[in-house]
Length: 524
Image (cartoon, rainbow, N blue to C red; front, side, top):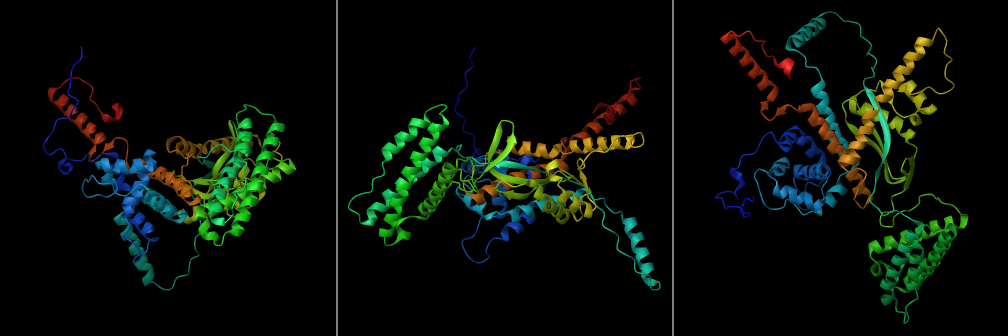
């Protein structure tokens, strides 16, 4: 049986005015907004702004809050603006005083925001989160202890001269977990033939732009139809032989070389080169020349690698990073050196677009730990690749233990050292398991917040995109420490249930029933 309901929503008086509708104060965005140190975030953001030049900027809370919403919900720039315009809780989160139906800003402003946010700004954001967590975990000093300390201090000052005490040596605290990963960029999978074909098409477009202003009567020949036909003849094959691939690459190199020669001649004829080509076209011209040089060098030397290899013409800063992992031997994106502390906060200590040895990051990460927490870590938990002789020597000088297998031949097990070696193996195995959280942090970023799908186009905006994802994950750690699962707004469910059971116990006592009393400790 079909029950008919009118799909048209009934007109209710006052429904369009959202100001009278009460908000749920236990909403996740309301609770998170009360935890974020907006004042510290705004001060750090406004340091990059001019106080007297330019148009008035958007409020810092609106800008930072929009970035958090975008990466928390994995939205596009346009969808983020639409969600803020439609959702009252998101408007409360970004600092609006009342509900409004207008868009807070145009979606293209996100590009300028990402350009403005550098690594120093995100470091200040994360430091504010660390300070909040440390203030929560720091034990409070009682008033009686304060008065006793003040009395001892006054009595010592009133006495005679006392001998100066030596400062206490620094004590290493906490554990530092470090590892590296790659934040993959969204690009087409690069092939040598595909790059040369794209470079050839760009060179043909440059010739079309320069010819009308060059003064030549006859346009230079580019053979673009033959070049396109030669490219498709091999690109449509499923598994072409290496000999055919080399022949096709050589053909595309010859077509590209001819076009580059025509472009040089046309530029010599043009009186003002700066007005003939735009800035983007001059940038493309430089890139395709470098692509031709690299591909010609690899073809001539019969090699499959070269230094600073370009794999994307639109994003020439991306490099292939060989990781050797199952299913994906090569990744294309930025390589991240990440450190994780006991409180669960992750920091991007190094973001590099070139393939480098991650073991070189260890001294920098240890020093950054001291800047953030005031002391060196007690131990460093890392892969064996970080345990080089130089790194072990550096850690030994600072009295920091490296939780990894010792270098050299293992000790021979005897009756005397049998228990000691077993204890050492047990501790090493336990510390190796303690590295799991940083792997989980990478999985959270890639599976939950698309850290492996960076859609920004330029180098600076891609770096801001990556650091924004880590900022969102750190804010979730902050929320998990301050907001317990059983707490919803102003009502503490645990206290409510405890009081309910106490009332049941009183009722049982009044009725004098031989029934076991209920306690929340044994039923929750």
